[in-house]
Amino acid sequence: MMAQSKLLVASLCAGMWLSCATPATAQESLGVTLSAASVSFSLSAGSATNAGSLPVAVTVNWLVLPTRNTISVYGYFTNAAAALAHVSVANPVDIPSSRIEVSVNGGGFAGFNQTVPFGAAGAGRRVAQQAITILNLLGQRTDTLQLNINLSGYTLPADTYIGSLRIRVQATP
Amino acid sequence: MFRHTLLRCVALLFVLAAAAPAHAQLNSSESTVTLTAVLPESLTVTLLPNTVSFTLASGSATNAGSATVSATTSWTLAATRTNVSLYGYFSSAPAALVHTLASNTVDIPSSRVEVSVNGGANAAFDQTVAFGAASAGRQLFSQALTVLTSTGARTDTVALNINLSGYALPADTYTGTLRIRAQSTP
Image 1 (cartoon, rainbow over the protein chains, first blue to last red):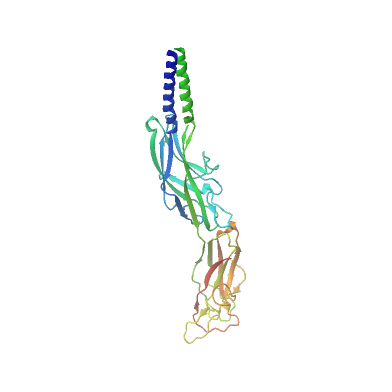
Image 2 (cartoon, chains in turn blue, yellow):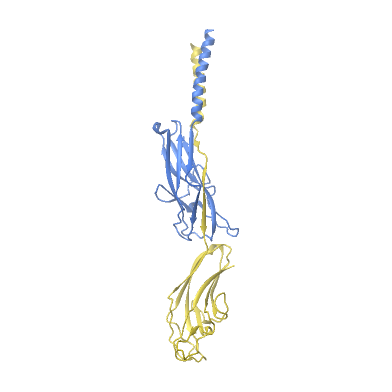
């Protein structure tokens, strides 16, 4: 009887631990919201400077376990050779991701030419990174992305080019 | 006592096992921005200089212009375009350069104004081209386009001459405007 009682108590304790521990895993969250759903560009042939119509504010919210030490924000395309694809059937030329540049929080422009955890090889860029400590397991940050299309030395027929820049956040390890 | 400890260990293992997936990387969902870039068609011509004078010698076939004109044609075209051409023309074939004196009724016809493109042979403005009056123009160049040359520029040197051989012209000042225009087709 005594042994059965101890077993019952032990099981209850284990159950309590599990009920505490399991939601802790499920409650980790990582979200990203963008201030704009679309950006347009009025291109000038051969120009290195074709700025996007407006900046995009990327807001990341997180609630993570103490095991995490880094949160990274990535921008990427699904195709390095055709980040923005032509519309005209007669036009075989696209805009590669390396020609699309991003400036984060007013920094220098850099092309989407890195291989990152998401998207196609050579079609991404890490746009922000946040160190995580016990003091910021719950947090938020906003980064401003200004986009540019660099057509310097790139022959592009007149056309409309369309694509999607994807943003995703990853917490590691 | 041993069983109690054993149960605690088992419970702890359960906890650790449940917590283990948290050590895998955690990814957010994907957010997207639609990017739309428009490169419009453009076709421009710039001339330098934009005035040319002639000192005429009566009856002479050679009355060269005071300066050659550099015509720079720049284009950004759709992939459907297969050709770009440059035309020079006047708005009147019989009176490309018109007299100044009221008592003078004679003009210089466009067929008497000749052009040499990039050092080539002189040819008169006597063609009917896409612009200007009938028989008052000349195609200065025609260039085939491919996707690789859908954006481009070229500069051509245009030297003008007025051929008065066999043409009686009263002494006077004659003025006119040579117009230059590019066209891409189709």
